Image (cartoon, rainbow, N blue to C red; front, side, top):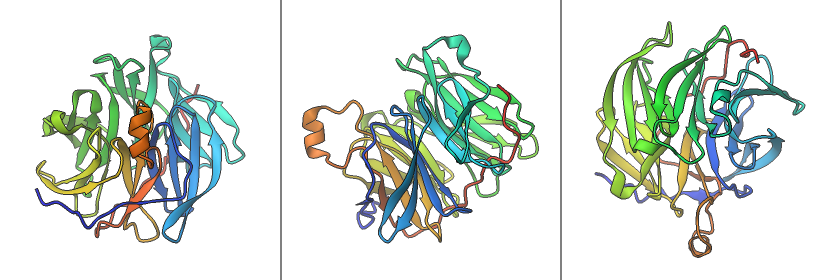
Length: 303
């Protein structure tokens, strides 16, 4: 595998997260969104020279796994046991809660919009019980569909530039699967192995796809973001100064900055003593361009 040692991340000026996740570049507002899952916070930042300045922090009032802009105003988030809307003024409205049948065992995790503007988000058990999670799709009419069950830790999502392939991560099983994707209906099929067998070097977490169709996946426990070609071959690597990178996205005015979220959760005092940047937002310029993210374009799912 070609190593990319020259792609050295730099720390942005941001507050440290217990469990940073879900970076999303909003091109309409030129803002970077990311969440601190366990603190229930949504950070909104603007690029300020070589770093990102947090301009606003929203309190979701519950654990929040992912957030995306909504074309109707505010943000749609995967939070607690379902979905919420956060208005521009910060008011939180509870929407569909498909995980309530699990009691308090599960929470929503990572999520992202497909090229048509549907919102996909999945769940996991707090104790990471195998198969306790699901993957949901919020369609443009506001309906919520469970697309996959028997998921352990539903995580990174992405689509090929032509929109015909969807990538779905299950961190608990240490794998990324590829599916045929029907943009007209949102249906997936023809599941196949994409990236598996990384147990010795961590597990795939959040991901993004660049304009060349290469997949970038944060490796939880592995201290790196890997670049993978559409055939699942490792072709590049960004080493980061922390052991728990969680996700990544391309952003900035020209979509050439790779933003990487990280976590402090679960690290010992000794670990934190040598990983001073754990929980911080990192960034680097890997020399490629990302794809523009899509906002949620549908009706809000009814509560």
